Structures are given as structure tokens and as C-alpha cells.
Length: 94
Length: 319
Image 1: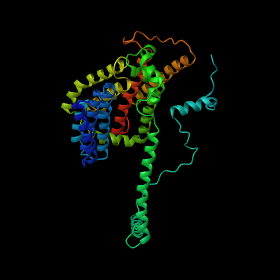
Image 2: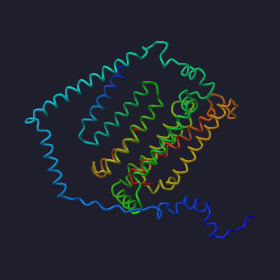
Image 3: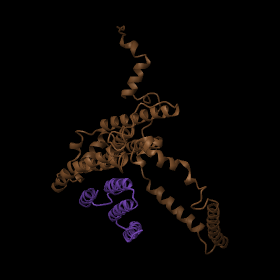
Image 4: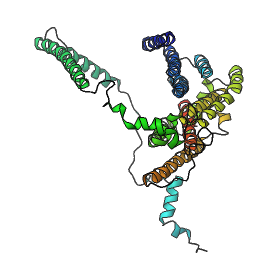
């Protein structure tokens, strides 16, 4: 295990803990998205690139978009601005 | 030439009733079953308040531990018992684990001949360079078939839960138009360049599933993400030109039934020791490894459509 992987795993733990302590729902989704991205990097380190692709597309992409839509439908985040930014940003990552 | 029957006679036949049911012209429940429209819910303030007061009074009485000696004792006993129970459960599980074979011994269930055979004969038997693809779409294709059906059933469930009737649909569309960003110049420019790249990358992942990392599921998810980005940038008007509920229905139907038929064929030939006519091809070529490539395409189509359908239904309850 290299130092890089240890840093990534530390980041993973920080993300996982801070999701549950985040009061703002939008922030929670963004942190969750970064959790998935770090996880996909870790999959590449563990030599399974197919899982990395799936994790990046499903975990970081689709799931968070569905979360955004749901939050907007239940009016948990303000109407259009944060949502539009969030969506375009994470689609680029993927 | 068959004889032309009068309409009244035709309407008595089973075929007439079957096709009427199929096209949805007549709901078999209407007229046959007793149905009441649901009454609108009327909140009763008075009863709710009374109920709340009673609830509070009961709670005060039940949890009045300071004045009730036996209740106090019971609470202490409850806590002690729960801790004891947890410790007992932990001990039980640890004892069970101690009976499992130790790491690295020969008798472990991991060290069976199946994994060895997959690695040694996988290339020869399935023709796929990517052993994982050979495993999930050839040796264990039955599992993957189930997974595709789970996806399909999940979409159907979402459709049932989120489906709206005609007037609600119009309302949803209006509210969707009001809140969604439309004609966002930056988003549209980025999407113009990114969407083709994302979709081509997804197609590449699907078609190369038997040669390198990837496969139907991951490629389909990437294509679905590209479609969602396109939908966000350009709106439902543009996507409805090529993707409607009908498209979804037929693509899923053909993919899943193709998967079923193809796999039934190979199960049949395999179980009866028959020679399969599907050529394996040279390992490493794009057209190789028998059924894996078409099966990857089928799975990819189902996954891409499912992801797009999920998003569309979350947005406005329909396509």
C-alpha cells in the first residue's frame, strides 16, 4: 500500500463521516459525490478499472443527479441556481 | 380465402376480447367490480388536539419514573438486559467465526476448482481475453440475466410510483419548465462538445467488453449519463425526437428477450452435449468470444435506457 492510497483512504473516511454530520443537504450530496470519485480512484489502484468506470458513472454521476432532482422536487434546496451548477459540474467530472 | 364473419359474431370470440384487452380499450375491472372514489381527507382539529392531550397524559403516567418505584426498577433491568444480550450476541458470533477454516489452509471454500478453471481455461472456453467478461456473460450468464431483469423491474416500479395522469402531467411539465434551467449558454456549449465524446466512450466500453475492462453495465451507465447531460442542456423537446416511452419499451423488450433466447440456446447445447454453432473466433479480435459481444450490447442498451428513464421520471413523472 503506497502513501497515495493511504491518503485516499483517509479522505474516504473524512468524507463518510462528514456526510452524516453535514446539516446542509446540498453539501451532503456534494461530499457524497466526492466520496464516489475517491472510491473510483481507489478501484484503479486496486487494479479493477471496470469497477472504477462503473463507480464514476453510477456513484458520482447518476445517483447524485437523482438526489438533486429529488431534493429540488421536495423543495429542500432553492429552486434553480445551486442545482444547475451542481449538475453541470459533476457531469464534467465524469 | 376465409369467410368474412359479421361483427356481432366476431365480438363474441376470445380473440376479440383478447385484442381489446391488449390495446387497453376496455378495462376489465370497470363495470365488473364495485369501486368507490376515494374521499378527500378532512383534517379534524378538535379530535387531533384531544388525541394529543390524551397521548401526553398517558406518556406522563407511564414514564413517571420518579414517583413509580417499580417502573424505575424495570427501566434499570431493561438496560442491564439489553447490554447482556448484546454481549451474548457478540460472544455467539465470535464463537461461530472460530469454527471457520483459517486463512490460507487448503480446505478453504475459496480454494475450490471453479476459480482455477476460470483462470486456466477461461480464454479457451469462452474466447474472451477479459476473464471477468467471460465469467459474468458466459459461465455465470444466468446471474447477469437476473440483474438486467432487476433493473427493468425497478424501472417499472418507479413508473408505477411516480406515474401521473394527464392533467397532473401537464402541471408537472409547466412547473418543470419554470424551475429547470433552459437555454443556458454555457451548459449548452459544454454539452455540445461533451455529449458525443461521452456517448462514444460508452459505446467503446460496451464493444470492448470482452477485450478490456468494462462491459455492458459500465458502458450503459456512461451512455445514460451522457443522455442525462444532453437532456439537461437542451430539454425534453430535443430528446423526445429519438427517445420516448415507446422506444424504451421496445428497446428493453428486444434486448431482454434476445438475451433470454441467446442464453437459452447456449444452456440447451451445453446441457445436452451438443456442438454450438456460434464461432468463438480468434481471441483478441473485436468479433470474437461468441455470444459475449451481442450480450454486452443488449445489457448496455437496457442499462442506458433505464438510467435515462429514471431521470425523466424523477423530473416530471413520465417521458
